[in-house]
Length: 560
Image (cartoon, rainbow, N blue to C red; front, side):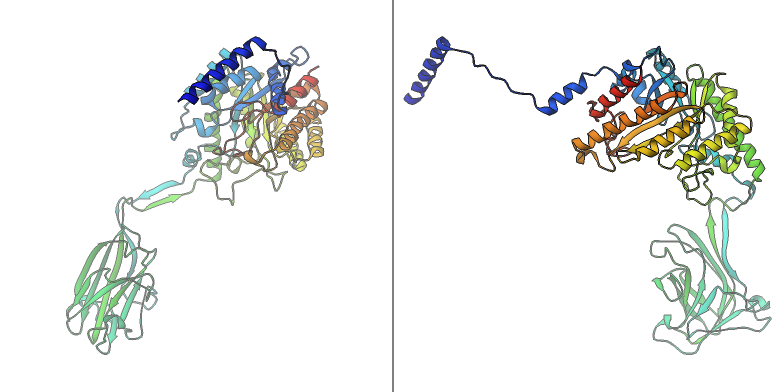
């Protein structure tokens, strides 16, 4: 305890002494480089502040986001309004989000979005009207579903049957100890026709050593109901069990349709069963005849299965009728969406992703493919002119001066696809519709071919159409967020700048609609879009990245 007091006194003395002799020490610590770089990036003004409205009055800097993020006025709402002129919804203005199972349109949320954007002074780009994905494909398929000619209602469907009057039947067989033959005519049930005769010459050690099988298809499924009905007799009184087999000889379960008793007089045997787990997957009934040495007789055998919905006969609609019905469905969808949106939406993706990747001068098709639940190819029913119709409907239901785009991806990767969409635009216009612009999506990476990017812009500029970079985001050549380095982010920033610089360099001013950033934030691992790829200008925590500063520099330099 004494030592503790002495220590305290010593400290007091030291403090007192230091108070009378204090002299400031001059030193400094440099900021970590990463902090200095981030402060530099954070010092940039909002992106849209760099746009020279006098020189570029119609240019739009856009961003894609979700309807909920904007309507709820969360951080993304503030980020979008501060940095961008225009918003595009990733999903919620598409057919699949709006069209209901009965074909009606649910547009209340879209109406709210338009009101919210108008109040903020941010324009809305219509994305998208006619596409093969994100559709209510179930509804569209129902529109062209086959016509129902008749329906029997619930009942028992015949699975297999045999009256054994001919030798043509193939639904039965036996093993070596059960010899198959037929009775003479007039010896069938009640003296009519003939019957099947199975002979077992001796008593077997096991009843299954002499077996008669009846096959059926499809195989039994758990919970199904079956009825076995047949006329039976034997030369002497005999009883024999049944087994469930997957195929004849492939035993599954010891009991299937119970034990059958036969006498020298014809009797009708009827048994209803519900398939248990032990019977499921079976496709044969085995009759074990080995315990009695006699002749067994079978006639008028039938196996039926209960059908809760009944049998339905249908007829496919004619192709021309399908075309008429699908065109009407497109009309209803586009008129409903555009009538609600046109007070505020002045530009649209009318036709999205029309060109085939493998055959870039031809249209995509769903024929021969296993389609996802939300896929529906309008062109497979409306033909090559589907886009002509879509642009005509957009003119009909939108505003007179709306800007109407056709849009596709990989135009910088596959220059023939770029040429293909240009040729398709010419075709559409040769049929009397007007296309105002071409959108190039540009979901690219730091390893994308810069020469091809420039060549794409040259091809698009040559059309004389408005050109929009419609969905720009840039990945790190497959590198996920956790593995990304500063070198990766530097390459990403430089690629963003290169794309924007080339757009302004090659696309004439009168043809520049604008640029939309598709993924403003890095994509989370749970995302359906470029999952766990750091593609954005901001991190998932809304921290600006180096790409932000180079985008700002590029917009600033090209807005003179």
